[in-house]
Image (tube, rainbow, N blue to C red; front, side, top):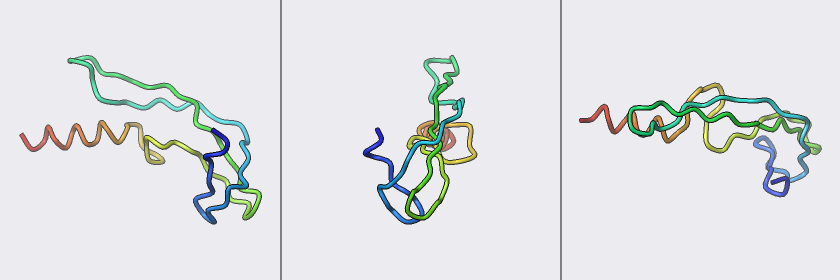
Length: 79
């Protein structure tokens, strides 16, 4: 939602969307089947400081898996 976008650099709410890109993320499997999420990640620009950034709340930048999958793999590695 546009009212929830906040600049990570200056924490300003004066952010506009400037397009987006498709991103594929692997998430927790269902049974033995791998699951992939294909989602649009909005590209944003802060009108206050000029910073450009992407918003993906369920995955860190530059990774191809969700935080849930990382936690799941961590639990499995302890068994």
